[in-house]
Amino acid sequence: MDLKSGYPYWAISNGLMHAFPPLQRDLQCDVLVIGGGITGALIADHLHHHGHDVAVVEQRDIGWGSTAASTALLQYEIDTPLLELTRRHGLEQALLAYRSCAEAVVALQHLATRLRDIGFQRNDSLYFASRRRDLKQLIAEYELRHQHGLPVRWLDAAGVHAEYGFTAPGAIVSSLAARVDPYRMTYRLLMRLCRRGGQVYDRTCVTGLEVGSRQVRARTDAGAVIRCKQLVVAAGYASQHWIRQNVARNRSSYALVTDPLPDELLGPLQRTLLWETARPYLYLRATDDQRLLIGGEDDAIDVPARRDRRVQHKAHKLVTKTSHLFPWLPLQPAFAWAGTFAETDDGLPFFGAHPQWGPRVQFAMAYGGNGITYSMLGAGLVRAAIERRPHPLARLFSFQRLG
Ligand SMILES: Cc1cc2nc3c(=O)[nH]c(=O)nc-3n(C[C@H](O)[C@H](O)[C@H](O)COP(=O)(O)OP(=O)(O)OC[C@H]3O[C@@H](n4cnc5c(N)ncnc54)[C@H](O)[C@@H]3O)c2cc1C
Image 1 (cartoon, protein in one colour):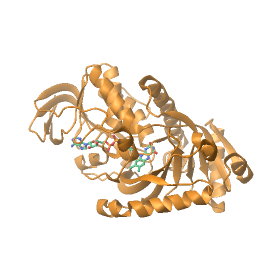
Image 2 (cartoon, helix red, strand yellow):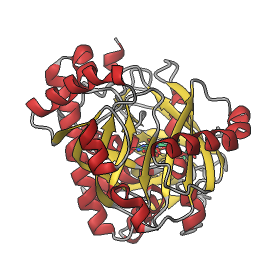
Image 3 (tube, protein in one colour):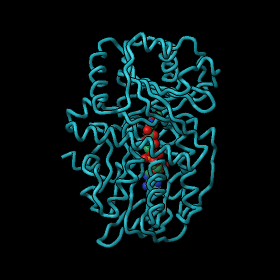
Image 4 (spheres, protein in one colour):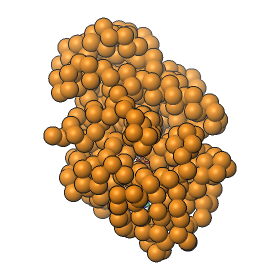
C-alpha cells in the first residue's frame, strides 16, 4: 500500500537511524506486533515494559509508513468537537474520550522525557473560528469544555489579535498540547526495545495468518513462520486489509515544512499549535529548528497517483492560506509531501478484537487526526485485552460501536 508521496521531513532530517535485521527463520513469542510505526512501537514498548515477550515485524523500514508523513501535533481535542461527540455517544462517553486523550498527552510527555531528544515540546493549541458564522458553535464548544474542567480559555477577536497578531473572530486556547518528532520517537522506542531483549525485524512482511484456539501462526514473505499467543495488528491504514468490514475512509492529506524562520518572526507560533473550524482545516506548528510545519488541504478520497501529482500545488495553496493569516512570514517550502489519512465516522479509533478473528488478534487502528494520542491510549487498551482485564475505553474504542 503506497502511503505517502514527496519527501516527508522527518525521514530526511533523521535518515535511517538504525538497521534492524529481516527475519530469516521461524520464531516463537508471546505477542507478535505487525507494524513498525509509532502505534506498533508504543504498544510493543508498553507490553515489554509489563513483562510480555514481544516481537515486532515491519514490511519496509521502521517508521516509513504514515508515521514519517505525520505532522505530529499531540492534542486532547479531537477532530470531532466535544459537542458533536456528545450528540453521538452521550456526555459521559464523550468526556471520557477527551479526558483520556488529555491523559495520553501527559503520558507521552513522561515517555519523551525518558527517551530524550525526540523533538518533544509542550505547546498551547489555538482552535480559531475560520468564519464569523462558526463563532456561535465555537463558543458553545468552549463553554462545554470549560464547564467540564478541560484546560481552556476564550479569546475574542481582539484577544486573538493581541496575543497572536492575526485576524479571527474568536478562538479556544488550550494549555495542554504538544509536538514531537514521530519518526525519531518510533526508532528510539524500538531500539530501546531491542536493547532490553525484545525483537524487531524490518523488511519482513506478514502475508498470511492462521488463528487456532491456542496460538496464532503468521507467515512471512520469506516463508518464516511466527507462532505467538497473541497478535497485534498495528499495520496502520493497511490494517483494513485484514478485516472484511469497512471501518474507515481513506483521504489524502498534504503537508510542508518551511525553511527556518527567525525567532522574532515566529513569535508565539514557536509554542502554539494552530488549527481552525473549517473542514478540511489548515493547521500548523513549529519544529525544534524553527521551521513551520503546515498541513491540510485534504482530498476526500486517497488516490496515490493523483496525490503524487498534487503535492506541489497543494503546498502552494497551504502557503497562500498561511500567508493570508501571517503576511509578515517569509514562507519558503523546503519539503512538501502527502500521506494517506484514515477517518472514522465519529473521529474515534478502533482498538480491540474483531469478531472475524476472535480474541487472539487485537487490532490497533489509530485512525483520525489524533492518531498518535490514540496510539498512546491504545497501548494500555491492548495490554488490558491481552491480560483479560477490563479497560474504561474498551467499549467506546471497539468495533462494537459500529453496531
Ligand atoms: C499528513 C499527515 C498528518 C498527520 N498529522 C497528525 C497529527 O498532527 N497528529 C497525530 O496525532 N496524528 C497525525 N497523523 C496521523 C498519524 O500519523 C497516524 O495516526 C500514525 O502515523 C499511525 O501510525 P501507525 O503506526 O498506526 O501506522 P504506520 O506509521 O503506517 O505504521 C504501520 C506500519 O505497518 C507496516 N505494515 C503494514 N502491513 C504490514 C504487513 N503485512 N507486514 C509487516 N508490516 C506491515 C507498514 O509498512 C507501516 O510501516 C497524520 C497523518 C498524516 C498522513
